[in-house]
Image 1 (cartoon, rainbow, N blue to C red):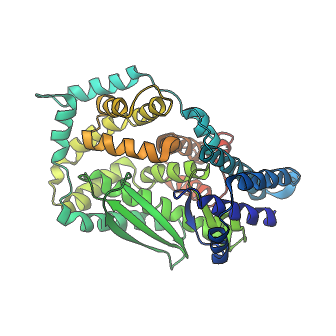
Image 2 (cartoon, helix red, strand yellow):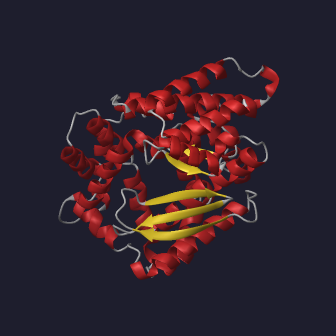
Image 3 (tube, rainbow, N blue to C red):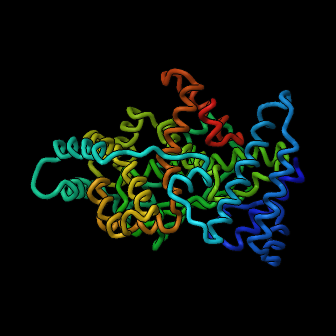
Length: 408
């Protein structure tokens, strides 16, 4: 299977020559990247070779006694190659519907959520935020008190990172040389990004185009760092690339089933690292003071934030309708404002994200829900956090993909 895995890596690099966003990380043999850059293979040839590798994989079905990781490896290569072929088809001009695209690329379909579901949440928020003006205006006014001042941003993020890292290291063994650096950037469609460089190193970029609210410090530190993307990539490199020599994990194609695991685990990892009561205590004693904010507002702020978080699937519905051609970009932005309580600037940024990454949006909320169900079904009661950490770390170190979560 190793020869087929090497062909898969080369195909991902080949496709990356046609899609600047496709290769999210690569730390395999450097000459393979050079060869891909020089060859600039045609899409039709990439697709033909991917079909050939898939056919060869079909003749190498592991025996029942081969072990779970080997079984998962075979399934991983099969699903990732199928997604690669779907991405090739998209670059050749094929237009998928939102659900068809997410299933082809991410091995999952997000459930539809009716407007009435969001309207009920909005009604609850309306009752919690009395006063004049629209609900969006009142929410924005409330949240303005919890913006991290720019001059305190770096100190606040460092405090959050230290907290996330120390909690993660209590339960997850990482190589001593692992590290990451933080940069602050502008003019991006995303709020933050982890660029994994291999060698257990990451660069995390935080977008400062829009005000950053205090809850984002822990969210981003966990999501992009510990126990999120940085830890996920470190564990894959250690457990699968270095310990087993599985070269396919030295490349990460963004538009693939792996992304649902990556984003879902990064979002669920926030709750694993900081159960609610512990998070509120940490916010009160560390994060709010680092940001220069009054910690007396912690409980009220997070009560409102928890309600607003129930609107997360509104982003999926806006993307589904927009990408299916049912509404325009302007109408999608308006829908986000009405049902997701996005400010005008945040709605426009979200539309930019949808234009660039399309159905990728499902990986954050659906991914979190799927990872949470899997981990908690395997770990048992949430009252045993050590067992939950154990199952979570095992997932991050494995080739398991979305359809494998449902089967346990």
